[in-house]
Image (tube, rainbow, N blue to C red):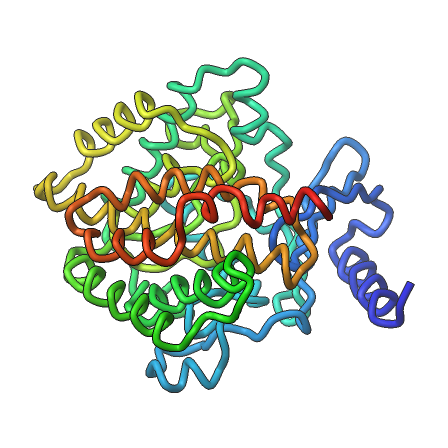
Length: 372
């Protein structure tokens, strides 16, 4: 064990001791794409989840709504509106969701300065597990849609307690699509991305996103999909849907979480199910949104999200030594190709067809992952 790991272990034990859980059995849970670690702690007949977010691994997001230039100086988390190592944001968002009657984990104990939270244990019945064991997909996704509607029918907050609730603005959205040209393209083409290629990609996206950014805002979970939802049928209504991994929540377009759920990077969602859930969402929203405009914005944001994911998965493989994420790229590119058929994305469709031919989209990085 390294000195850093030893110090972190001691800090973790100190947190558990002060929380009254020092005698608990610790069971490490599966890691996610971030530097966070999750440990189930079991004491007598009770269990909780210890979230361990090492503070030195990521720069904290900006605490105030600074200018784009200042955000760039602060680093990527501030630019992209990510919580980074800021556990206080998880606490604030959890309290907001719970106040709406939704199932976010209760905060049992918190040391946000050192990056430790002790959370209510929702169990292991992730949507992906529930589906694998025979729970009806329509029931699961219908409940997830109803939970999303319950959030979106409430006014979007401007602050969460003392913490500003950031807008998912142009600066953040463009920083995310830059991940594709920074991480995927060089690996796929076997050469650095030229500056003019990167700038053209960014300029096309900027023009495409502008109309979407003018539309009304809602609370956006930002990572609303089957591996971040936990099925709890013993609860009632929207509380049956346990929510986690929401610390990066922002104010954004209502279509974003819908497409996050229905264009899931890690599992296939059938077109029939996606169509039914979209119809359910639109039927139950308490607004008079133009459905045609909604579908246009959904196509744009779906493509933006998929471009981001392609870049992130390539980065996880190259920088973080996690090539397993490359196996999802063919699915994400299939979603992307579908999204790019929308007329709003005509110019970007041409760019991707020129820069990333079909055989590169589907095969290049996946093959690299299989060889590792």
